[in-house]
Length: 438
Image 1 (cartoon, rainbow, N blue to C red):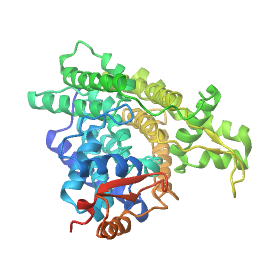
Image 2 (cartoon, rainbow, N blue to C red; image 1 turned 120 degrees about the horizontal axis):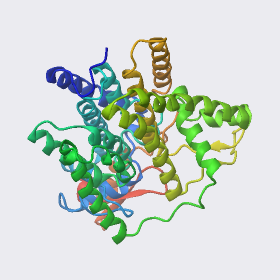
Image 3 (tube, one colour; image 1 turned 30 degrees about the vertical axis):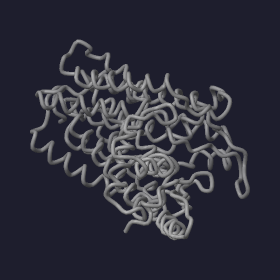
């Protein structure tokens, strides 16, 4: 039987579980990435965060907006990588730092998910979701620029957690502040803070998020960002991309499942598959009727917040959602978007919470076991994706060593460009003094 709402497992057992999950998650994140991706720097990681950290004193750019937003955690980790490692090791160091961040987030989810009427096994699963959903390796895991998806995943847990000590209040408030200073999309999930608004135990998280989002608002209003990629997509395409790009991969483990169905079975079959994949999320909403307190709030907020997050991200950035068939492709391709993993995390968490609080009645155990088996199979099927945005390189280490050779030539410039993915569009311009050291 799950623990009663508001009660928690013994602190030592919770701490042991959080430590185990926090150590396992970075390893899983690392192994889910192909070797070439581990050794390749992604666009902003190299061209903005690492290049900036290498050219300026530590801390100079921590609160400097880029593309209209603040990115505190990526900038801090970039300072750490460039300060501790020689330039040829920056790519592997960045991947390791981003995987370690995933471990910290996973451990925090375990710690923050107490008092929701679910047991330690469900809390362990919630923590491991941080590195387990299908879309993560494509453009999020091992990547600083898109690590904000993992920080966004912390927001609902911060807002329902009830602190029980002064040190806990300070810790939760600081984590919430750091999250908000690194991820502007936290504003989409912030309304969950209205639940139990008068409860002082939730004040640290609300205050930390409010301060961070206020700073983000100043950045948004005071700096420019890149224009939207295209025209506002039609509503049916937004819904189709959510179903085919988020819901289907949760159950198939393959981010390209929607495109495959569209090409081989047609739009009717794809629509039927999307509706079937949506049923578990709808059941999570139904389960909220039998839940209490924080679990009820989350069972409603997670699916609703996931849909809102998807809609806002797509409508603000306006990426192409359906691409025409290219060479070797059998039909139109649904775009794999970097917004998908955060939405997958929220939807998967709702299913875990619904299952974790379900009592053994009316075949409930069989239903939960079947759903858990399907999710596990999907996670295993997508453990190593066929391709990521960095799977084709260019590898950073040989580029950095070649840059050192260029810097050693007579009359060389004080800086040197090093290619990063996606090449040749992006390059990192770093000081020669950095690439020639060591």
